[in-house]
Image (cartoon, rainbow, N blue to C red; front, side):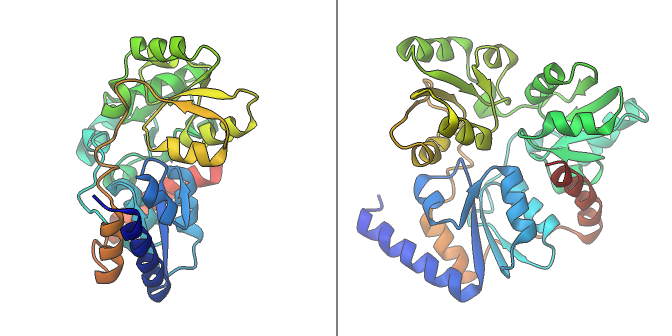
Length: 307
């Protein structure tokens, strides 16, 4: 177990190495608290994508999962993108391949494919546009069509369908294991234990869980909502790593999860030691083939332009 003095020493070494390498450190909201704290920027997929696209740094160290680092490389091909833990993948992203996405499109000729950013570069490359949980309804509306294909998250697709009823959403049958396993009973129990709390739910949860929410929000949306809300207590139905950011963003307010805790094993693979080693050795470089990158870039840029 890493002690406080060890953490302090690692943080100092990471910051020294980052300065020496000309590196910026990006961390997702679900990362370990100490990894979030050492990062230059912490955010959700869309926010970190924007940071990757706009950074002047020569090196991007991405504390997240593989599709996120790939997205950074898609947007910043001239940068060196490193992952402290290259084995950190996303089960949902693995639920659809480029070949499956092409077959999905072939079954519905002429219907555009909207792909959640939680997907591989190869799948992005065969998509018309990407989206995040923060902007998925706006992305779908922007296409101005009657039907869209949506991959890979069936739960996010269901939520988007409810927000944009004028568009038929045809979903792929994928899901986030961490969010999908949450049961109605767990949320109801947390709400009973904290009757004054607002219930905030991520749209990757099942529709019956989403129906219990006072607000359905992405991680960035939850952070903004917690700051702006008059409520003092919140039941937070998303991966537990967000609690750290919520407590920093809204000090004095109280945040409660559900039981069992929502934990993404992949997000917790990155440690301070691995961030330090990554910078020291310049290891874990993420590459995307040029032809794939060019095609995926168009879909990701459309997502960013929509906001």
